[in-house]
Amino acid sequence: MKKFQYFGLIQKYFKPSSLAYHYYLPHVVMVTSKSLAIAKRLHLTPAKMRFIEESAMLHDIGIIHVHAPDIGCHGTDAYVTHALRGAEILRKEGFSRHAQLVERHMGVGISKQEVIRQQLPLPKRDMIPKTLEERIVSYADLFFSKNDEFLFLPRTPALIKRWLSKFGAEYVERFEAWQYALGK
Image (tube, rainbow, N blue to C red; front, side, top):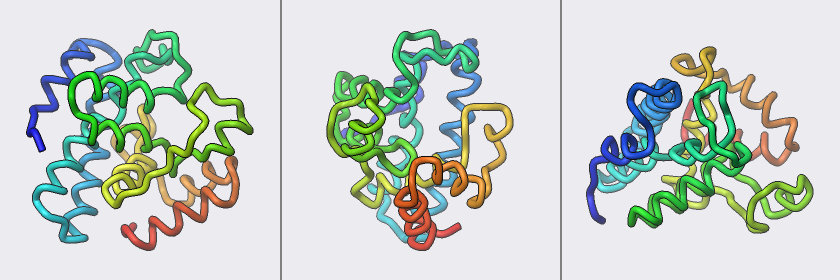
C-alpha cells in the first residue's frame, strides 16, 4: 500500500483558514483517535492501524462538495452524498482502497432498499461497511459530529441509538452489534 501524508491531501481541498477546515479537522481527529483506540484494543496489525488512521482522517473529505453553509461548505450536492463524493476524490487521487471505506462510512451504512425507499441521490446499491476497518471508522464516526455540541465531546450510545431509530430497528441493531464487537 502506498503510504501518504493525508494532511497534504486535506489542505489541497480545505483552506486551513476556512470555516470548513475549522469543523473538518477536529471532527476527523476525534474520529481517528477513537478508531485507533478500538484498533489497538483489538490488536490489529500496524498496517491495518495505518490504513484506519489514513482513512479516518479522510473519511469526510467529500463534504467540500456539499451544501452545508453552517459548517463552511458551499457546494451544490446534498449532504447525504458526501461519502460518495469523498470516494470520488480519493479514487482520483489514487487511493481506491481508502475510497471504498469512505464510500461506506455513513452511519451504520445505507442499504439499496433505503436508497430506493427514500429516493436518495445515491447509486442504487448497498453502501454498508463490510470490513472490520470500515466498521471501526463508521462506528467511531457516529460518536462525533461537525457541530459545536459534538465536535469534541462524544455522543452517548443512547443518543446514537435514538437517532438511528428514526431509520429503522435494523440500524439500531447493527449499532448494538458493533458496540458489542468493538467496545464502548
